[in-house]
Length: 240
Image (cartoon, rainbow, N blue to C red):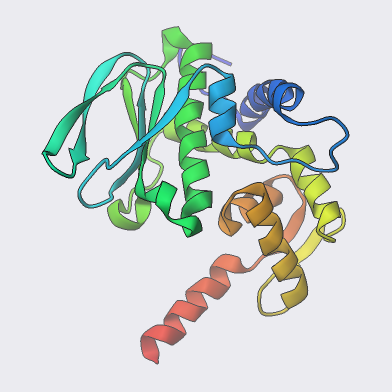
């Protein structure tokens, strides 16, 4: 690997995540647990970072941000309007609406893990870190922003590996009666297994989409019909 470009492979990122999760399991997971989940706030605290909440934008276009060096950023204050917030290089700042919405737990956890991934990569490779000191996690439903550079892809991939270690998924699959591998994930053709999958995603604290993609990547799921079925459902609704 050419460290000057910091093009980390998925395998490189998995190894980084594995070493971090080993520390997390030792410090935060009771021994002899049949399965566990990763709390990204607890993980951040263990690594010396803190997670705080504020209204980041008026339109909800930014869900999280952090900075690898101390700097000022802007947030929205209910009484004062736009005001300044000091990011000290050790803080992950998350949109506070993600904290108050129970349905946003998966999005909140992934946003925290994404910003934590930026901090970890900067800590591990400070001399070749992205020159953009402030990192933002955009709400892609609003901004329609795809992953546009290698650093954001790396943060997404590392976030998924931190939230969903292989052994955590495998043990949860056993506990939730899904066996060692799922052939098909479909709310239409395998309702019972789909409901078990949803319960597993809730236990692991991630969205169904994130869990399904991660399971595909690890070879634990052969066919994922969630996106296709959601698209068909939207088409039916638009013509109804």
